[in-house]
Length: 374
Image (cartoon, rainbow, N blue to C red; front, side):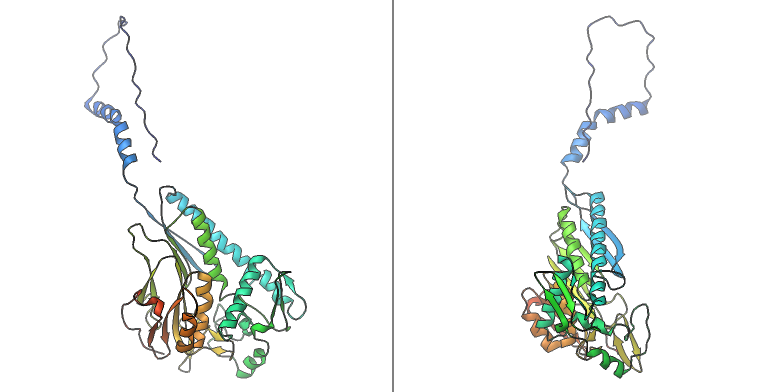
């Protein structure tokens, strides 16, 4: 807020003034400065009464092994400095969730894996609820979304350990005996999680990021922001509309186009957006594309789609459904989408055909046809 400047007038009394030499006349520049100061009240008052103009503020950072970005418009109560502070707090919230749910270092999930086949592990309400939601997603998706896919970790190498050589079929089949969401045993009363088989492992990489985006958005809402987005990798949530009344826009990446190329745009207001694609964490060997979206039923990369973009009320829901739809394929996947309230999808199938769900009719703007290629 601008501080109001008060002009103080000095009262003069009717009395003889002491005899002093006359003061020299002030130079013209000084006179102008005094005149400007005398008009200070009016200038500040004009500024204070001017209509508020929202400023767009950006922020970024890293967490959960990906790039995190923020954008928000200031409000009369939340200025640019406070907005950046809110971004910092939201980023710390994402990192807090990472410490609970990562498998890269000691965490609640790591402790569950270490006790597999031996004993139940008590976890926080947050971790328990995310795992419970993951099990529910498995149940409604024919087991295509399954956090026990992590049992295959180390066979397929798409991360920092990238190795463009598929694992031997016999090694994949040996691990598959321990994959399956029914191996996850939950105790709602005690808030414990147990893995029934000793070699079964879980990983929340397909759902925790969406949950973290939702929680970061909650931090921004509590700060007083009403128009913003949070993005972590392929997971994005937009809240409110822009000050001019228009919706936020998200680009749907061209699966075979150059990085940064989009074939469609999707309007977002109070909805999340998540894309699963076979173009990231991938390699081509012997003319075939291999990627990180593994079908837990076969232990092999899913082949029915090139990309699936999900529009949903929460980032958590979008994050868990995109992989399931990708693995199910366009027909079964679209049926799953239509069965869940508030969810829509844009699907590019293995033959490069584009499918748009009923709820997104009129919301998706096709810019061009997706590029073709392996």
